[in-house]
Image (tube, rainbow, N blue to C red; front, top):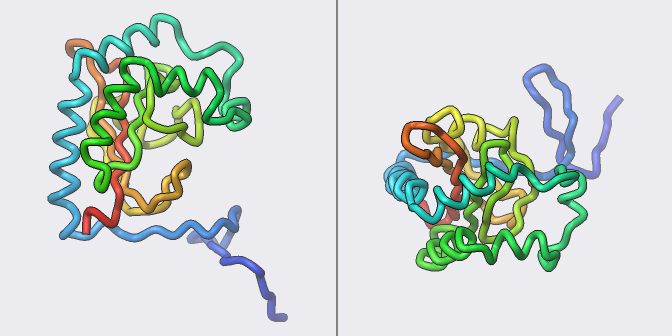
Length: 187
């Protein structure tokens, strides 16, 4: 029997599929890596910025916004006061300034606190709580993280390679800074 699917079918190693979205990924090439490495150094420096560290410390003291999980987050619009507050706060303004200084290279920056909740960002990310995602978990363990392939960013839909850096207060990791790099600029 021959089956036809009206969408691309993606199978894992076991031949199972739990998705039918047309996400395409492309490997990071050796030509792209030097540019990514430069951005990783920049992200590590940004993660030490006093405005960024202060914002994370203050947000961690308050904790995530009560009753706001990923399901409720997806119901919010960019114009919602909660979302606007995370773009317009001092850390959000700093992130936007950095992104706007390199509009071809960077398409989004997101700052998260110790509970993986959003502290500030340049545009609304797809989720509010990032725990369980490698971009948060790896950097919160104290490591720089890099996505192994380029693929559409879940909130901007721009073909991107994400990197993230730990935000530290002294030697303690208190948050994560994620930078979404535009793949076309890395070629």
